[in-house]
Amino acid sequence: MKLMFISDIHGSLHWLEKALEKAEQEQPHTLVILGDFLYHGPRNPLPDGYDPQGVAARLNAYGKSLVAVRGNCDAEVDQMLLQFPMMGDYVLILHEGRKIYATHGHGFSIDNLPALSAGDIFIQGHTHLPVADVKEGVFLLNPGSISLPKENNPNSYATLENGVFTIKDFAGNTVKQISL
Image 1 (spheres, rainbow, N blue to C red):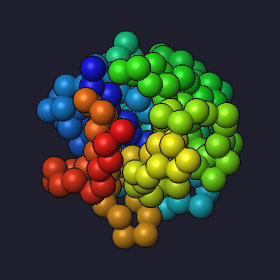
Image 2 (image 1 turned 30 degrees about the vertical axis):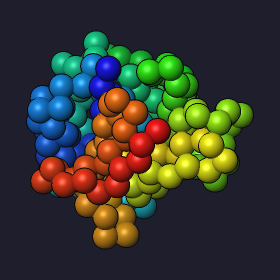
Image 3 (image 1 turned 180 degrees about the vertical axis):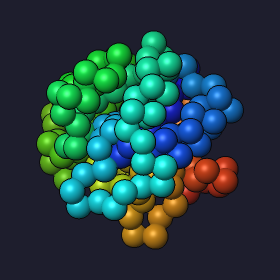
């Protein structure tokens, strides 16, 4: 079962369309969105193609194949536009015999982990930085940001399939990869 992860859309219909094109190519069983759906946030510039209502409409078309969590820029008013649940701070996913703790990263984070066991997976967005690492047996992952990457990283998304987590840019290049 293939999972695809995106994070930090920040209202960019332009980058969401690119991510959904990749989802059509990747054919994941589930698309996991790690928060910050519609609003760009007060510290961020407006991303390319800023269109929160357009983002909501496009995501609603995928609602049945989405798993989503709330980001620090998301609010109850966003949930009113989105037809799938996205206000949870985290979601637990059982995947290929592993527990995945998926969250945005503004509460629990790679630097402030919840109680996890060796072999478990912690994945977050929030920092806009791609991460594929392991610490004390816990896999630490971040797909980066599709719309507003930081520190000269490319716009990126990630897949998890057959025990391999791969962060990719939109040209199809592997940014980072780790075998779980």
